[in-house]
Length: 203
Length: 189
Image (cartoon, rainbow over all chains, first blue to last red; front, side):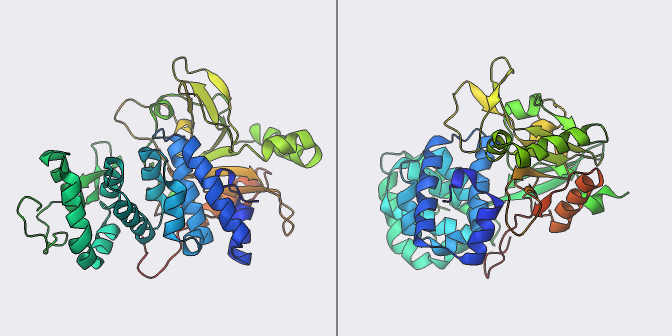
C-alpha cells in the first residue's frame, strides 16, 4: 500500500511499470491528505518533504491519473503554507488548473493568496492567458467582488502578483562565489503584460 | 579529478533552508573515507541479517551529499530542540507531527554553519534508503531525493551514478534511483 509520507523508489518504479489501480489512487489521496494536515512547512526539511512528494508522484505519472477535482477535495482544509509548498512541486499546468479550480470554488482570502503565489510562475501565466476568455468573464469579475472588504491595497497586491513573475538573477561576488536570487521581472516587460487588462489600476 | 564533471557544479541550494539548518550540524554527521566506510557497510548490512535493524532502516533514510571538495558526507535526519540545539530524536519518514519546539535538520545542515545571509553550496545530494526489490541484489538505494541539492534543474542522472561509483570505490554497494521531471508537451522546465 502506497503511503505518500514514506514514498519508496520501488513504489515509483512499480507505478511506472504497472500503472495505477483505483486502490493506488485512493491510497495516494488518502495518505497525501494526512501528510498535508500533519507536516508543517518549516522553510527547511519538512517543506522539502512536501515538495519532493509532489515531484516524485509527478515522475510516477500520478498527476496524469488523478483528476484536479479529486485533488482539490483532498487538499482542502490544509494550511495555506502547506498547500503553497505542495503547489510548487506540481507540474506547472496541473498546478495552475488546481489553483484555478480552487479559486472558482472559493472566494476566501487564503485561497486568493494561494492563487496569487501560484500565478507568479511564468507557466501559470501562460495558462491564464490561455484561459483569457473564461478568466475575463468569470474570475476577474469574482475577483472584483472578492476584493470588496479586502481594501484596495491588498486587492492591488493580488493583481500585481499576477502580472509580476519572478526571474532568477545570477551574480558573482568578489570571491568568485556564484549567487542566485529571485527578483521581480520588470512589470513593463511587454512579454508579461496582459493586453486585455485595460484598467490602469489593475495594470 | 574534475568534480564539476563527475558530480555537477557546486551551487547554492534551491528553495529554502531553516535557520537551524544554516547554523547546526547533525550529531551523526560523517565523511565517507577509508575509516568510516567499513562501519557504514556494517551498519547497512545489519538490515539483511537482523530484523530489528531492518525495521529501523525501512523507516529512516540516511542523508548524503557531495561537497565542494568532492567529499561525501552522510548523516541521519535528526530532530533537534530549537532552543538548545540538542538532539531530540530521529523522526521516521512517516512519523507523527513534530512539536513546535523541535526542528528537523535536512541536507543543508550537513555543510558547515554559515552567517546570516550567506549561502550553502553542494554538488549533489539525496537519500540512502533501505528498499529491497526482487530484481536487484542490492537492497540499499542511493537517490537524489532532496529538493535543495538533488532535484535541481542542472542535476543529471550521470552525477548520481558517479556518486554511486564513489560509494562503491570504498566498498559501499548501492543501486541508484534518479528522480527526474517528466518531459511533456508544454511542460518542459
